[in-house]
Each structure stands twice: as structure tokens, then as C-alpha cells.
Amino acid sequence: MSDPAVNWLLSSQDPSVRYLTLVDVLGESTRTKAVRSAKDAIPQSPRIRALLEGQRKDGGFGVHPYHKWMGAFWRLVSLVELGAPRLDPRMRLAANQVLEWLNSGPLTIEVNGRARIHASIPGNAIAVCTRLGMSDDARVRRLVDTLIETQWADGGWNCDQNPDATHSSFYESLATLWGLIEYSKTTENTEAAGAVERVAELFLEHRLFRSTSSGDVINQEWLKLHYPLYWHYDILQALVILSRAQKLSNPRVKEALDIIESKRDKQGLWRSEGYFWRPMTSTRSISKDGPRREVVDWGRRGPNEMITLNALRVLRAADRI
Image (cartoon, rainbow, N blue to C red):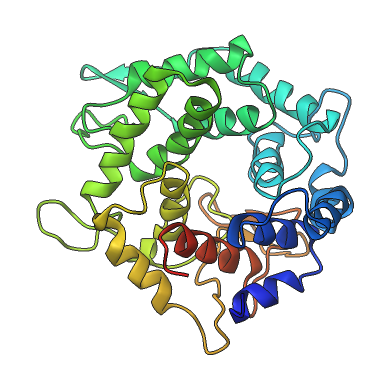
């Protein structure tokens, strides 16, 4: 392929980026020499090593599993998305700490007859554990059952304890969709598959970013590109997750895809337009809702590898390249 973005990604110093470009964008067989070479190098990549550095005997990293963005929970999400080896015992050890935490108490409360849950937390955990071959773990199944039981009528979930909140949260529902996609694909669980269809429809009926009543853009920040998203939302991440459910042939994603295509720079690449993280070297104090320190430098200047990779992934899935 002569696409400049593809060529740029294939020249990356990060073997994860090269591997994912070869497999997800170019569709190359995992048996080819180039793919095997990139895959074999992934464990020694600087990003993978940084994410696993400092792990302790309990599987954690000296902080609460959910500590933003340095806890085992967030590190695992990044490790899985970078294609880290699923059989690495360090990954399973970290996942065990996360599952023990999530299964140590109730996940939901009820307000005005509706279950309120931080659904993105079990959603991400289910996705990670399924990718690691742990879908048959009873603790994972409990998380899945909880999500299915608490899914709102409009297809999603919400953690808002305001009794007047009656619409699902995109923030709580996107990672949850990912987790249920991974689980339903691996286990062929029909209940999880049904939940996937319902939550996918939530995003599709909004065309990923528009109000169903007025047609207005719900949040301008959703049209900007970010990586990593953590528990946040933007249209590129929504397209990535929906592509994993084979939903990009749906005409209601066309406008979002058009926006992604329009954001290519003169070199044919994509750049970050916002950040939910800051470098470890930053000395700025952390506000309650401000960006937290990250153990990985995801790139804050110039073209962004992970955003460019995700843009190409969705354009390929939508038959636009």
C-alpha cells in the first residue's frame, strides 16, 4: 500500500505499532516474516517495558488498581491495546489483582428505580481479561452478568446518582461495549451478544455525537482526537469499538468517518487534538479533574502514531482505503 500513513507507521520504532499496522490495516497473515518479527519484538518495546516496570508480587504497582493512570487497571488496558503477549504471566498477575478488587463488593446502587454503575470499569476489565484468555473465570462472568442485569432501556449505562438522570452515559457505555464485544465473540454467549446490539444502537442512533432531538453536536470535545481515551469519549474511539462489532457499514457512521478523514494533515497523518494525560516529568500540580501522570509517553507533539493507526483501522473497516 502506498498510503503515506501506512509507510510512516511501518517505520515506527515501536514494534507494537508495526505489528498492529501489518495485521489490522494491511491484513497480513500472522505467519509472515514481517509480522512474526514485529510480534517477537513487542515484549522489549519501551512502552511495554514502562507499563510493566515496578510490578510487585501482588500483581500491582504500589498503588490502588484504579489509580489514574498508574494502577494495574489502566496499565492492562494499554498493554492489551498494544498487543502485549497474552501469555505473559505478569499480565495475568495484574489482571488477578484487578478482578479481586472488582469482586470484593457491590458494583451498583439503585436510585429512583434505576441501577447506577460505573460500567466502564467492569467493561474495560472484561475486555482485558477476555483478551488474556480469562473469559471462563467466574469473576469475569460475574462482571458480565452485572452489566447485562443493569443495562438501561436505551441500551447503555450511567453512574449519575441524580434521580432525574434517565439517559445513558456515552462515557460509561463505550468501554462497556468493548468488553461485551470481546466476551461475546470468545464465548458465543447470546445474552452478551444481545447486550452488544442494544448498546451499539445507542451510539448509532446518535450518529456517534448528535442529539436525537435537536440534531446538535452533544459535545464539541467528542469531535477532537485523543489517545489514550481511558474512560473518556471521542468519535474515533467510538468508531474503533464499533468496528470490532462490525458496525461500520451502517450509514449512520458516515458523518463521523467523514470527520476523521478530514483531519488528515498535509503528510497524510493524524495528530492529537487533546490530552487526558501528562508526562511523568511534569511538575504541575494535579487538580481533581485534571490530566494525571502517565508512565508512557503517547506523544504530544507532531503526528500521533496511535491516533493515526486507529484512523487507518476504521477507514479500512469501512472500506475507505
